Image 1: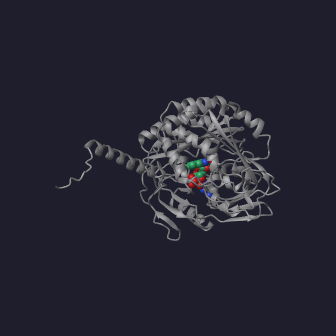
Image 2: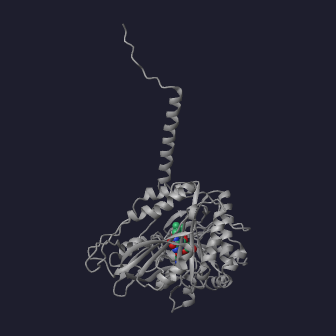
Image 3: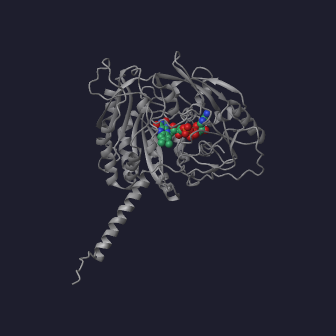
Length: 540
Ligand SMILES: Cc1cc2nc3c(=O)[nH]c(=O)nc-3n(C[C@H](O)[C@H](O)[C@H](O)COP(=O)(O)OP(=O)(O)OC[C@H]3O[C@@H](n4cnc5c(N)ncnc54)[C@H](O)[C@@H]3O)c2cc1C
């Protein structure tokens, strides 16, 4: 008798089910891996960015001069884009500056051949601020020497130095006084927008500048500060590279103080009260960061307040190197999932509220003198050393755009209510929202003619015409709300504003443009941004 083997024969339905589940798992795994992956190349979706009613692209040069072989060319011809990935622009060429003589010679070559010059560093501006059609671009990133004068408590830096590298040089004894809330930017790019960040007492970078050496369009070099050649100083700081090349800056540095970290959740509406009762009077709070909820359930209603209270002027002598941010893939995944619907936006807020504190690294060993029990201690350099790698992704069809709106302090509540309504009634995902404190800034094109609170937004859009149109509509609505409340919008970002919005926000623009022609009559220094604000400002 032949023994019958019992054979398992899966039904067609089971096979189908297994295929669907396996396929879904594979698709899910591949999708999650894609969302968690870092960039394989810089974003470059072409030239999508535009300005209302103004043709930005210029015709190619009819007779481009031949390249001066004595200059260190990084590129002859080609094009450049910025962090938006939407501003691809053909340029004459790119000179890689590492010595002052490269700047002198490049400007002379440009003057002799009728070329425009644009100044570029990390190119994190988002509206063609660092290049122009057919321009000779100075790439300043390798012009980056740093020297520290411990006795004077200053550092003298070339403009291509970026805060990340500077912090590694200053650590463990010293720290940067004023910079952005992340460390990925150059000093030149930061002075040129008058950047500001987490130190609400120090305010913007302008307040940390002892002096600067600036090369003007005619090749002469001038030293300026708030007390020497003050008019030039007020135009170079926040002057978007239109008045001269910052060759060197001497900046204040401060102690790398030890802070006790803490966080609390408050209602966004209570922030002005928190500011006047807690933040402003307490000089021991060295850094502060206000992070608003972007979850649909409490959108811009709850706020995590991160505070850093000083407990010592300096860390122990054996303080380790600063270290880099951890859990990058996971943070990038959570950020990118948040672009895909409410559930994931709630998940992001949940992780920020409850999980992140558990992964906080406390970098300073407690000493008896600090007497801080179980507190988490860090040095000033730790929270300021954030190069936000999780913000950069490999999603080519989309881009994330920064916005910042400065609101007179008394108008904060009603403005946030309006911004909340505007942002709720549109479809682009809001990835981050934070609140900053800025002081009155006395520079020519100031974003803060009076003390202000700033709302900073990071918003995702498709990298195409349609996405750009949605972002334009949203930006204009937010700018209009800002103007209604007596505020101003920040200029390093996209050029979506109308002429009326620009003039209402920056009534000092005509004087700024007139000063530009005084310092640079032939308009040697140019950029797409310059041509846009000039046209919108009513100057042909
Ligand atoms: C993700 C993200 C976060 C940001 N966070 C903050 C923040 O917290 N606070 C804040 O204030 N801003 C913030 N910004 C804006 C940022 O500060 C500006 O875009 C800054 O200019 C970027 O520096 P950069 O080195 O990339 O400069 P670039 O984009 O290369 O250049 C910016 C401008 O500086 C000019 N420039 C560069 N070098 C020189 C020089 N040597 N001399 C004269 N002009 C020069 C250029 O011509 C250009 O007009 C943020 C931007 C992004 C994308």
